Length: 66
Image (tube, rainbow, N blue to C red; front, side, top):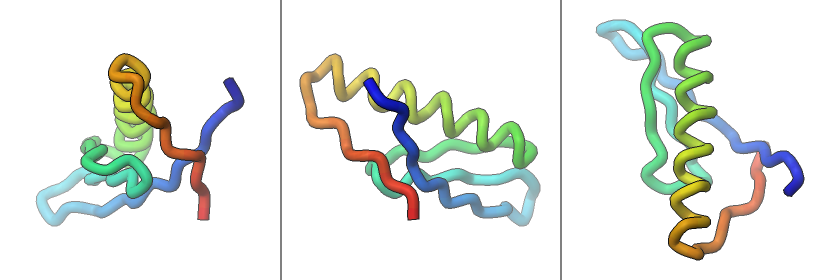
């Protein structure tokens, strides 16, 4: 399987930390206390999301980077 790239939307939260949304994967949202942690959490969330799609034999959205 070729590497996949997904666009991340990062939002700095007023109380601290960052919320990350992966628009191509509906409902795939995570959070990190720092920018680096938020990106790492997003990688993990994407992996788990895709694993779940595979387990349920659902279509995996194509890579997307805009």
